[in-house]
Length: 105
Image (cartoon, rainbow, N blue to C red):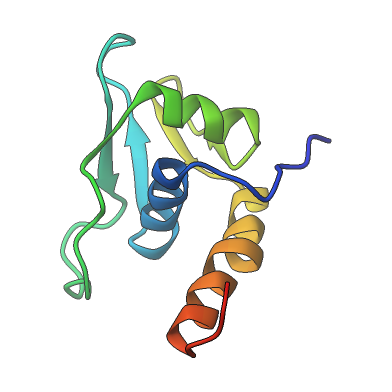
């Protein structure tokens, strides 16, 4: 199994954070355009923040796929993998908690 390094680009961190926290997924409309970031649930409670972006560059998608943080749900749709959720909890959420508590990252 490939284990992602702790260093992940900022754009990839933001995309993964949006996908987990805002329950979003990626959808491709064309292999030559950005991937659209869409909410998994329509309606529901309004989120505390807006997503970092409504589209994701293909290089970000490639980085997340290569590190096994996202996986295909269909031919055009990508979702966060179990490993991606674990990485988010261990690396991203923990880092955010440290910042919120005023600690060094």
